[in-house]
Image (cartoon, rainbow, N blue to C red; front, side):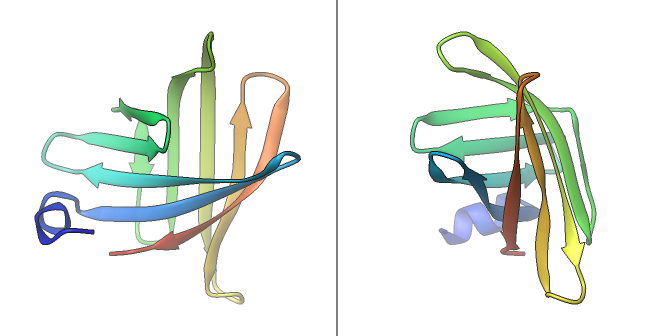
Amino acid sequence: MSDEKNIKYAHSFTVTAHTPFGDDEYLFLVDELAGELEVSTQRGSVKTKKYIVGEDLLEADFCIETPMTTSVHISFKKNESEQKYVGIVEIGEFLSTPVTAKRHQ
């Protein structure tokens, strides 16, 4: 990540969703000045103002185009015993899958 991004974003996480079709990786960037969370993938990015971030957790709601609009809810928190972030992502009404995350800042 560039120094410019390190200055702009207060928090950043690499999140891996473990789906039945394989692992998908996402970059979560929290811009506290704008009050936005940006979620980036190889297929594009989306921004949301519906998020909560702390030292131990991140929770967010946003929509993606898949080609139809689908709502996504993600929540993960630090697992002290394993020293990593774990949680779940719910995609639409029918799919939920575990996630792991690594905090960069």
